Length: 566
Image 1 (cartoon, one colour):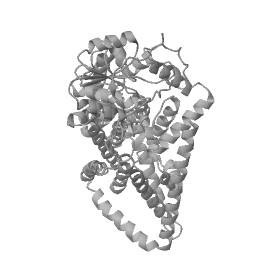
Image 2: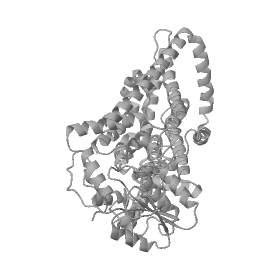
Image 3: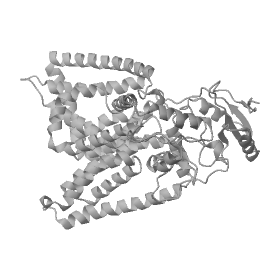
Image 4: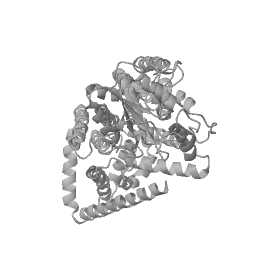
C-alpha cells in the first residue's frame, strides 16, 4: 500500500496545484475586471434560470444530455471492460435475469467453475442484491450490459435534479443537476464499470425528493416515489440504504401523527401517503422474500449472508472477531479468504488507520474535487441552516456506517449522493451572497468552484482516466481478446486457466454466464487430475485450451497436462 499511497499523493499534488493556479487566475481576473465578469456570468445565469423554470423539460434534457455527452467521448473512454470480482458477479446476475430466471440450477462440475462472490448451492447465482443486476439485464436485452449502466447513471442524474427541485429554487436545482452530471455522468467509475452506484443513488434521491414534497402536502405520486426509493435502496445497498433512510422514516412517522400537521387532515395523510407507501413496501418485502427463497432456500436468508457464511472467515465489521480459517477447493480461494482478507484487516490499529485512510481517499475521489473546498466559507452557514438538518443526519449516519465496515468502496455510500449535492449546493448559495463592500467576492469564489469541476471532468476525459484508482475501470483486455478469438472459431470450447504460484488474487479469469452448458466458450480452473478428468469427460464435445494469466496472458494453446510432483 505505501507505493500506492505515494502515487496517489503525487497525482493529488499535481491536481491540487492546477486547481490553486486556476483559482488565483480566475479570482485575479474577476478582481481586475469586475463588471465584465459580472455581466458575462450574470447573463449566463439569467439565461439558465429561464430554462430551469421548465422543470419537467430540464429533467428530460439532463437525462438525454448525460447519455449524449457520455457517448460523445467513447473514443477516449470506451465501453468498460470488467475486471473486478464484483463486476463479473453482477454480470452473471444480469445474464440470469436476461434469460428470464432469478437463479440457475447448480452445475455438476461446479468445483471447476467456482468463482468469487457467487453462490453455487442451493442455486448458482450472484450474492448481491438484485437492483444493479436488473439495470445490467436491461442493457443486455438492449445489446450490451453497459447500456444499462449508461441509462441508470443518466436516470440518477435526473433523479438528483428532481430531488433538488423539491428543496431549492429551480435555477439552483438545475445547477445542482448539471454538477451531478459532470461529476458522476461522464468520467466517474460509476459510469465506467459494472459495480453500481447509480441505482442506489437514484433510490436515495427519490426518497429525499419525495419526502419533502409529501410533508408539504401528500400526493399519491410522491408517496409512490418515496416507497419506490425505499424499495430500490433495500435491493441495492440494504445496509447503507437503511442508515440513510432511517432519519427520513422517523420524520415521516412523526409527521403522520403530529398535531402540527393538522392543516392536512389525518385521513388524507393516511389515504394519500401512509397506505400507498405501506402497500408498496409490503409488495417489496414479499418480492424480496421470494427472491431470497429462490436463491438460498430461505425467504429470510439473503444471498450475501449465505456467501459470507460459506466462504468468509474475516469479519465484515471492525468490531467483529475473525472466524477460524476455512478449507477451499482451490488455491486461489485459500489465498484470497485465508490470506489477503485476513492480512488486510488484522484487528490492529495500524490496519484500521490504513483502511480508514483508503476509504477517505476513495470517497473524496468519487464525491469531491479540489474546487469543492472553495465552498467551505458557505458551509458554516449551511451547517447552521435548520432547513437541511435531516440530510446532514442521513449523511453522518452513512459516513459513520461506512467506516465501521471492513470493506468499503465509494459506491457503497451511494444512497447519500443526493445529500452531498444538496449540502454543496446550499453552501454555494450562502457563499454566493458573501461580499465585502461592493466587491462580490463570494459569487466569484462560487463560480470558480463550479468551473473547477468542469476542468476536473474535462481533464479526466482527456487523460482517459475515469478514476484515481485505475483498477476500478480499466480492466485487462487479455481475457476478452481470447474470448473473442474463440467466439470466431467453429465449435464449442473449454478454456482451462492455469495460475502461477505468484498469482495476483484480484486478477481472476474464471467467470461464466447463466447457461454454462450451452455457452460457446466455458472457463474453468485447474483443480486436480481427478477433477479435471471428470470435467473433460463432461465436456467431451469441446476443444480444450490452456491459458496462463500469470505468464503470457495473450497466449492460447491446446491444453496439456501440468507437470505434477511425483
